[in-house]
Length: 348
Image (cartoon, one colour):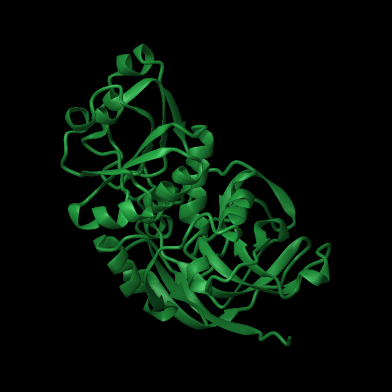
């Protein structure tokens, strides 16, 4: 395959609204270095990580650009975002078997290797390096996972960020058969993934959502749904769940601890309801609760996710698709939260 010198894509030029996303037709096609593969991107998912990075949500300094990346440092702009990507390997760097050319791959978004070296602290694809919002991207070969299944590119692009985040939270909290798991934000990408992945482990799932989305989540595997406005302790009873998978935080956060059994496990990977919560430390130590903040993936998580996809244990949930050029409209629809599952961008 003869590769072009230039490609089209979307670049982040600063922090702010959709106006800081710029369509370009003159981007340089990356050259794979030692240990790298070059991927022709076919589809990329829309997710909270990319939007939070764009608006500076990760900053603890009032959206200050100096600490607006998820690692707490400044981004190198302009940047090609896109944490969720599916595509085909079209070229390889030194040290990568040329037989990998032609592999259909999912890109693992949490990176431990980049630019030919192991990283002291993990990067996130599309944050500390360019991601999937362009026709081509490069990534270390270890993070381009070959996948063999009948799903479409758009369906595959719905998996990487949301499902690996969900699987990581379940892994960290050691969810097993017989556990009762409460999932907040059940209709979002990570929430709906958690429902499926927890059920695949044999757990019972209770999902918090709006009434209009309850039936869909029950079809995914939730045994019960709760209205977002419900009093969790009154509805479920105190000391009633083994694990809480929290993507919301916000004002109702203390009640999540009330419903956890003694020895319960709590994992968090989002705060769409607000990042500042009220904590009575006595609840934590008197109930022997364990807390897990989940960003960096455990080493086995993404490979296990690919196996679950290939064995048809979990299903993609694509709500809408948009051309990459319409990323502003796609992210607007994502922010309105009227969908269940993922919104995906078609690339190229």
